[in-house]
Amino acid sequence: MSSGITLTSGMRNNLFSLQSTATLMERTQTRLSSGKKVNTSLDDPINFFTAQEHTLRATDLASRKDAMSEAIQTVKAANNGIEGITELISNAKALAQSALSASTTTEANTYACQYEEVLSQITQMSDNSGYKGINLLDGSDDTITVQFAPTTNDASLTITGFEACSGGLSITSNSGSWAGSSANCSTAITAAISSLDNARDTLRTESKKLATNLGIVTARQDFTTKMINTLDEGAANLVNADLNEEGANMLMLQTRQALGTSSLSMASQAAQSVLRLF
Image (cartoon, rainbow, N blue to C red; front, side, top):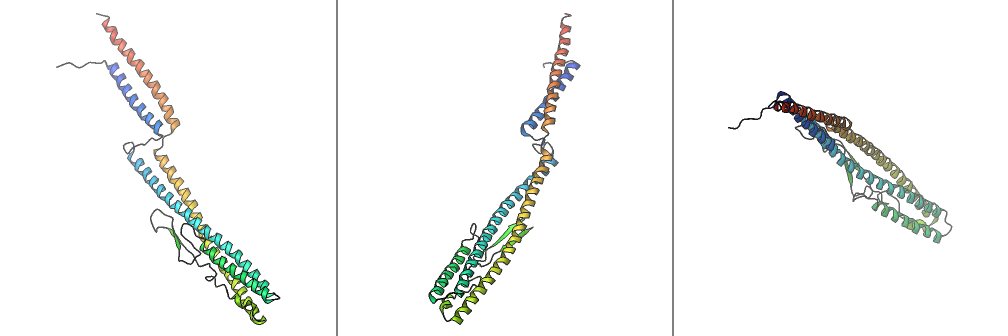
């Protein structure tokens, strides 16, 4: 059986110190390269899994935030339609008022035809106000349910549309009677103007509802952004390394390693001096 190598007490202590320094340097190099002081659950189980939970929740909220962005665009598309339809209603009202003071049947018929064309454009605009297949103005019972929290139905908002075509707004379209007798013509045109005013009021009411819902979604989106940042920051505080501190540690460990190597060399030289006695 071969005998083991016997080291002096000084050499053994120096060697142990160098091994410890090498282990610390490896850990510090890992932290510097990854930017984290906790890379696996073995480093710190509590901080590792807590940070992971924060990160997963932030990821879930980010997906909700994307859905909020799409909902905002859908509401904006509907609001664009309302603004356009409101302008067309103003044009239709101007035509009706002009027909009311028309001096000839031909002139009244001209205004009536133009009026009907504007009503047709109102319907077309309501049909074209959708976003990604959802139209809050076409009367198809389209709704948006916006989820705010990671868990479904934990916090949500349902936005309901309405029918903004000329028929849905109950705009009178019997302009064919505008060229009748003076009394009947005046009655028909006045009824049309009244229906246009009612349609305008309906649009204003629905626009306020959409604006309120838009404000809610926007506020929740801003809140979600802040929560994601808070969760990410919390996770980082638990696992991220202080690179300045780790850099300083590396310099100290390199100095310690150099001193340990010199000390081990000196201990070795002391042992070698014994050989000179023989």
